[in-house]
Amino acid sequence: TLVGSHLKTAEDVVDYPHFPDGTKSLLKKHLTPAIWNELKDKQDKHGFTFKQAIFSGCKNTDSGIGVYAGSHDSYAAFAPLMDKIILDYHKHGKSAKHVSDMDASKLKAPPFAPEDAAMIVSTRIRVGRNLADYPLGPGLSKQQRLDIMNTVVKALETFEGDLQGKFYPLQGMSKDVQNKLIEDHFLFKQVSTPLQTARERFKDLDKMQYLMNLCVAVLDIIKIRRVNALGQSPFIYIMTRRNIRGIKVLEGDRFLEACNLNREWPEGRGIFHNDEKTFLVWVNEEDQLRIISMQQGADLHKVFERLQRATTHIEKVAKFAHDSHLGYITSCPTNLGTALRASVHIRLPKLSQRWDEFQKIADEFYVQIRGIHGEHSESTDATYDISNKRRLGRSEKDLVQDMYNGVKKMIEREKQL
Ligand code: ADP
Ligand code: CIR
Image 1 (cartoon, protein in one colour):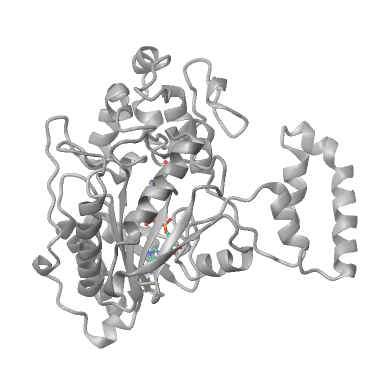
Image 2: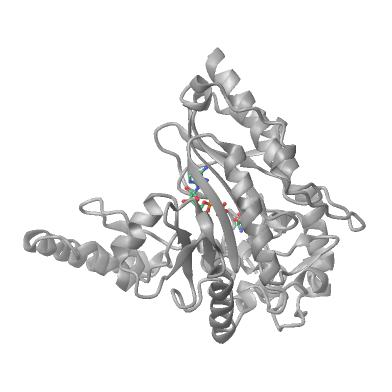
C-alpha cells in the first residue's frame, strides 16, 4: 500500500506500507516487513488494532513518530514495533526502569537575572495522565469517555485554596470563548467540520462580502473538475483555499484525527481551571488528563511547585495507568514516563536567525524547539517554545532541569550575538 493523505481508514492499509521518499518517521524506520507480517492482524486486549495504531503515521507521512496506543496493553501487544520506537526515541531499553522525583526544591535553577528573565514571556509545565481502568483515548467508546469526564470532574472538585477551580465543558462553549482561550494558550486546538468552518467564516461578514464569498465559491465550483482530478475533496478545497478576510480557521490536529482521538468532538471534552488560569486540566484531549501549571514570566520554581502540589493531590483520588518500565502510560509513545513537558515561551530574535546553531544547542541540551501556538505550529515575533525533549527513564526534576539548562545556554548565546 502506498501510504499518504489519500487513505481514509486504517483498513485501507491492506498490505505492507510503502512510504514516499523523504518520510522521516520512526514508524517508517522501524516497521520492517517481518514486523508487519507478525502484527498486521493483531489487536490489543481492548480491540484496538495494529493498523489503527500505525494509521496516523501512514496517513500523515510528515509524522515524526507515527504511532499511537489504544490502551496500556497496546505497548505489549504491539511490542515488536513499540519497543523499537521507544528505544530509538527515549534510549530506554526493554529492561530499563522508570524513575520519578517531583521535588521542586531539588532543582538547580537560580532565578534568571532580570535582563535575562525579560526575554521569557511565560513558563508552563504539563504532565499527561490516563485512568488505570480504561483504554486510552484512541480506544475509548463514547460512553467510556463520558464516564471518564464525570470521574475526573468529581476529583477536580476536591481541590482547595489557589488550586480550586471550575470545569468548563467544551460542548456548549461559544466559539468566541474557545478562540480566546486558545489564543491565550490555555486551551487545546479545536476540531471543526467543514460546515462549522464555513459558518465561522461567514459569521461576521456583511452582505457585500457574503456575496463576494459566494461568487468565489461559484468560481471554485467551476474548478472542481480539476480538483477532482487531483483526488482532493472539492468541498474541503473550497472551504480551505479561500480566506477572503483572513479570518483564521482553527483546525483540529490531523495526527490525532487519524488515530481516532477526535471522534464525537466536542462531547466529553473540557477544561478545568482556577480563577487566575495558573492551574488547568484538559480533559479527554490527547490524554484523558493534561495537568498544567503556567504563568507569565520566568518563575520556574513556582510553576513546578504548583504542579507538584496538584499532581500529589489528584493521585490520592484517582488511579492512573502506570508501570515500572514505562512510567505513566500515554497515548503517544513520546510522552511515556513522566509525560512531562516543561516549556518557556522565549524571544530569541538573533539566535533564531541562525537556525543551524539554534538547533545544535537544542540537540546538545536535550530540548525541543516548537512554534508558540503548539506543536506543529509556526512561530511569530521571534518567540519560540523551548521544552525538554526527554520524558522516560529520568525523573521529573531532571527533565525540568534539562529545560532550564537549554534555555540558559540560549539566553547566553543570544546576548553574545
Ligand atoms: P503540549 O503537548 O504540552 O500540550 P502543545 O505544543 O500542543 O503542547 O501546546 C499546547 C498549548 O500550550 C499551546 O497553546 C501552547 O502555545 C501553550 N504553551 C506551551 N508552552 C507554553 C508556555 N511556556 N507559555 C505559554 N503557553 C504555552
Ligand atoms: C508525530 O508523529 O509527529 C505526531 N504523531 C506527534 C508526535 C509527538 N507527540 C505528541 O504530540 N504527543
